Amino acid sequence: MAIIPVPQLSDNYAYLVVDDASRECGVVDCSEAAKVLDAVQRQGLKLVAVLPTHWHFDHVGGNEDLARALPGIRVYGARNENGRIPAQTNEVADGATVRVGALTGRVIGIPAHTNGHVAYYFPELEAVFTGDTMFIAGCGRVFEGKAETMVASLAKLAALPAATRVYCGHEYTVKNLEFALTLEPGNQALKAKYAWAKKARAAGQFTIPSTIGDEQQFNPFLRTASPELRASLKKIDPALPDDPVAIFAAARALKDKF
Ligand SMILES: [Zn+2]
Image 1 (cartoon, rainbow, N blue to C red):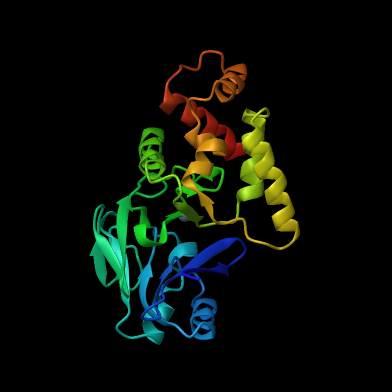
Image 2 (image 1 turned 90 degrees about the vertical axis):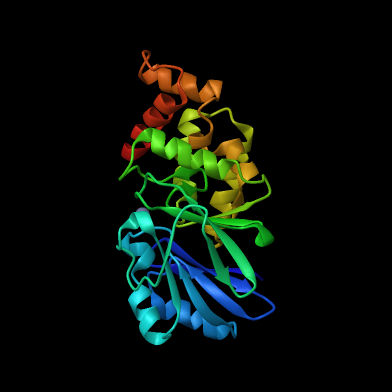
């Protein structure tokens, strides 16, 4: 298996990205080094790189411990995070590449949750790591940008091939789907995903990954053109303009209080 989730804290995910040939791996978003190092050892892997999506503590809290345990490990950090990635060794920016064994990942700049938030896209694995920008059926809070910044960032992710698997930073899926249902109660794909996710969580299973194609069916923050979603928002604010950024902002504001 080329991607191994490692639960962190109460609802975070770190992910091991494995190059099967060399048995080298990278870790996306490590907040608890011990759990990550345990998983690396259990799988018989060699951890060579840390790939943080953004500077928030629950995504980088384990970096210093990893760097101490594994001298020489590469710790990538986005330029626009302005040095806030602990133990950073390699600066990257939108369009740069990262290496894990023979695998190459592309850095995609997706600001808004933080200024330097990035995704890592591995075409060979058909996988993208989206941190706190795109969740399953949701998106992150807009802390360091504007609504239009997040709309543009989500559009970059949505433009990846439909089969691309989405690995996000938190297990927020059920709550996200409950919110989405308030806006699109008639969306069949959404209802089916909610039933599936409730069952998966009750059985103690992860709801990651999703796919870009599936997200387009039920993620409200990618569905600003949906007539049902727009109608739901206009019931609350009849003056809301038919503009993707305004629709996004109205949905995001509701989610902030949900
Ligand atoms: Zn965050």
